Amino acid sequence: MNVRLYVWQRATAAVMAPLVVVHIAIIFYASRQGMSAADVLARTRGSIAWAAFYALFVLAVSIHASIGVRNILTEWSPLPERRADACAVFFGLVLAALGLRAVAAVVLP
Amino acid sequence: MAWIIAPNGRARATSDDAANTSECDENADAARLCGRWSHLVKCAKQSQTTAGKKVEMNSELSVSLWRGARHGRYETYRVPQRQSQTVLDVVTFVQRHIDPTLSYRFACRVGVCGSCAMTVNGKPRWTCRTHVAKVAAGGRLEIGPLANLPVIKDLATDMRLFFEKWQQAKGAFVPTKTRHDAIAQIKPDTPARQAADAAIECINCGVCYAACDTVRWNSDYLGPAALTRAWTLVNDARDGGNNARLQAVAGNGGCHACHSHQSCQELCPQALNPTAAIAGLKRRTAMAYLNGEITP
Image (tube, rainbow over all chains, first blue to last red):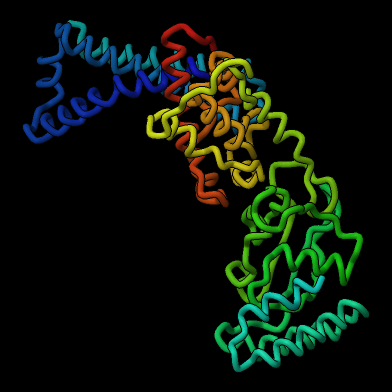
């Protein structure tokens, strides 16, 4: 890992820390209130705040996790560095696409 | 090698046993002169009946030593056990009395030069400062060359890569003054000087390098010793090479490759903390990168 990847990984970790806390608190709240899927969707659909919250979460996770995967590949696999980079970028893009698709499904009206 | 047999037993003997110990010392001198193995073993047993009243010991050690280069094997030797015996004493005994073809490296024998580090029962250690009694469970020792370095022969490793990485990390002091300038006034209680002093006692024995998991799986990684040296100089107010140094340790094999497993600080014979030094470098290089002073 070089200093640029280090800064990105630490920065995304710092972004994720409060988001994870809020995300877990929401899960506890929804389950303790006995909310159904329809109740949840009623609150999230059309909400710019929830869209921004989870879109940011997804992007931070995608960057953070793909850097971690790159480290694993460069340290533990025989892949050359460029190929490990390509694999990590692909992994990050897949994570971001799947995550943003899920966000769109719950916030788009 | 009279010092293997004689001085330790004499120093530890009680006053009641002094006569016996002296007699043993004389016998050891005789054994040294004629090189008789059985005499040495007998002498070792005598000493244990005197000094060994306080410390229970086996009469002999079973010592497995790595023989060969990269492809080799462990060979087992029987070595008389002594009080206050160091692992280096054991290796030296084998070379002087059993197999003179055994290759190993040492110089000062007192923990100053950093030459005699080897793998002792699975952990890298200074052999000159490692007492057999503390590491030889069941009277068994397995001594190999330092890990993560090419083996030249037997217990001697090629340290060139280790020192080359020290240079790659810009471990050399870059002066900012000449001999014509006044001597720099350095206050010892400033945080920067204290950070520099914390790691300045490194003698490059290679124990941390051999203990490091990251070095094992990443051949480009500079290693704890080189990075600790870099951290020392980064905090040295008299040094003028910090930009190049931070640049050198910010790449793929630099400080950010460290996983903070802390084997280096656990096994450092000088009780230094390379992990803390590397963490300092991570912070310093990150700031330098954000300020545009270095590039990845």
